[in-house]
Image 1 (cartoon, rainbow, N blue to C red):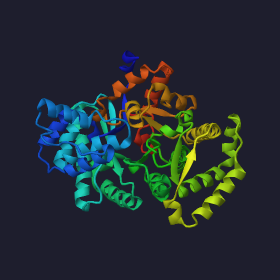
Image 2: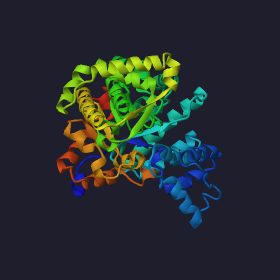
Image 3: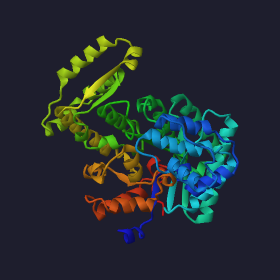
Image 4: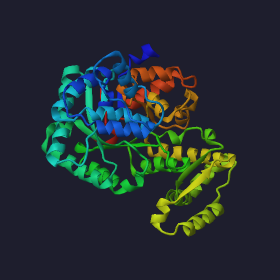
Length: 451
C-alpha cells in the first residue's frame, strides 16, 4: 500500500498550523524572542497533571532540558487536558504576529508531505479589530507565498471562538475581509470550531450555522465550509449525549466533523461504569430521543431492545421535580450507570445516528494517532474507523497535529495499513474521498476535484 499511496494525490483536511511545528521548529519559534507567556503553559500543565512544570532552562539544548522539552511537548499521555497542555507550550512562546505567522507557514509548508493541505488557525479573541484582521491577512498571504515556493496547494481555515456571540463577530470581520482582500477571498475556505468541547453544545450554534449556510447559497464564490470538532472528548456527559452532539452538528449543517469517536466506539467497554452529566443535559437527551423515537426504535429493535417511552417520560417528570428551574438543572448532576441493557440501547442509538450522518453526507475526519492518544484507545480494534466504513459513512484520514504527534499524513496512512480489519480498497477509498471533500467543494465554492 505504501507504494500505491505514491500514485495518489494526498489531501490533509484536518491539520492545525502551529500543531505542525516539530521540536526543531519549537526551538526556532522560541528564539524569535516573543514575550513569553509561561503562565498559559504552567496553568494548563497544572490542570492536566496536578503539579507545576519545570520551565527553568527549558530551551537551552542541554541533554536534560532537551528531554524535558520533548516530554512536555510530544510525550503527553491520554486525555484532552494533557494534549492541551502540550499545545499551550507552543502558545506560551509565540505571539502570532504577522511576521511570525509568515515564518511558521514557511516552516510547516516546507515539511508538508500532502499535495493539498487545509491549515487551521485559532487566533486569540477578542482582539482589537485591526490586529485580528492583520493576523488573518498574514495567514492567507503567507500560504499564498508558500504555495508558490513549494508547488503544493494550501488553504486557510479560521478557527472561531466556541462562544457564539464572539463567533458572529469574527464571521462579520471575515466577510468584510473577503470583500476587501483578494488573498483572503482566495485562500480562506472554511470556519472551524476546536478546543475544549465540554460545555459548548453545538445546539447553541444553530443561528450561526444558518447564517453561514444562507450566505454560501447567496454568494457561492465566497462560500465557507463549517468544520466542527465533536465527540472526541466528552468527560462531562453520558455517551448518549455525546452521540447526540455529533448528530446535532450534522443536522445543523456541518460539512465535516472532526473525530466523532463516540459515534462508533464499542459501547461494551463502558459496561459496569458510571458517567455523570447535568440534569439539563439529560433532559435534552430525553427530548431528543422522543423527537426521533420512530427512527431510533427501528434500530433498537435490531438489538432486541424496545424504545423505553414510558420510562423516559417518568424520568423526565422526576428530574423536573428534582430541579424545577433552568439554573438548578444546569448545576445538579445525575449518575448514569451502564448496564448490559443500556449498552444495547447505546449500540442501537449509535447505528441510528450513523444513518443520520450518512443521509446528510457529513464527512468524518479520522486522525488515527491523535484519536489513539487523546482518547486513550488501546488498540486498532478499539477505534471506530472500521465501523464507520461498514455503515457507509464518508471518512477521510488526516494528521491533526503532526508536530506534537511526530507524524504526517503519510505516516497516518501507514498506521492504518497495519490495522487488520481494513482492506486496501478501504484505504484507497478514503484517500479518494479526501479529494472530493475539500472545503471549497463541500461549501459549494467549487464543483470539481482540485488536481
